[in-house]
Image 1 (cartoon, helix red, strand yellow):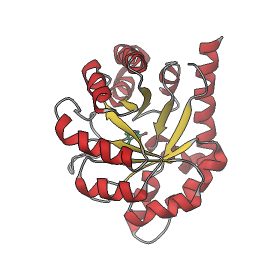
Image 2 (cartoon, protein in one colour; image 1 turned 180 degrees about the vertical axis):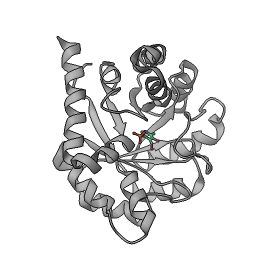
Image 3 (cartoon, protein in one colour; image 1 turned 180 degrees about the horizontal axis):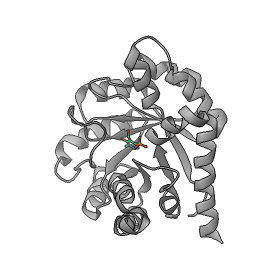
Image 4 (cartoon, helix red, strand yellow; image 1 turned 45 degrees about the vertical axis):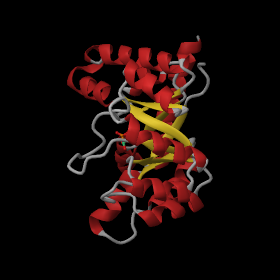
Length: 251
Ligand code: PXP
């Protein structure tokens, strides 16, 4: 299970910069094409209800620009479900969404919202998308994800990243352990665990070393880093840190 770990590049914030001025530059579709050449394994885009970054017309443009599989993040609403079932992305990741938040804060409460999430999981799966649920690394949320029939859970690493920022690796150790236990629990239940949020060159290796994880989705840091080094160099460096973590695990 310590095979290569997939890197999904989240390109939302290319669109954030574009939208700051209006117009068409920088174009997230161009980032999608570059991501493929740089060695990313997939693209993640979040069509938020307020369209603050990715816009509806970006979906098809991104698909045309890159052969990489698309993971569409979406709120569990009728509007998003209609868009996703028409667009039919490779994967659809259901995330919690609040208008006032700056980014996706906390995981989806699949245990508390089981009844409203269940039909959306079903519709997305019927449309052919691989459904993923963005949850906290919590055994109850994992158990309910299994009941909901989602094949994938994405574990929220936001708390881990925040703790790392405050006090480095030692401060984040307990949360890392929670991620480890959750990834194991997901595998035990037949789910494929992914992880993401707030990952950087500094904090990615301990997460990448969790053998059960199949994919990391990383955006804000890499798009920020691309300002200084270019997108291909940023993606390649992240890729090599992830590969190094997996190699150390196998050694
Ligand atoms: N995974 C999910 C489900 C997310 O909502 C986000 C943020 O959009 C990410 C991963 C990427 O987080 P970050 O931009 O902090 O790397």
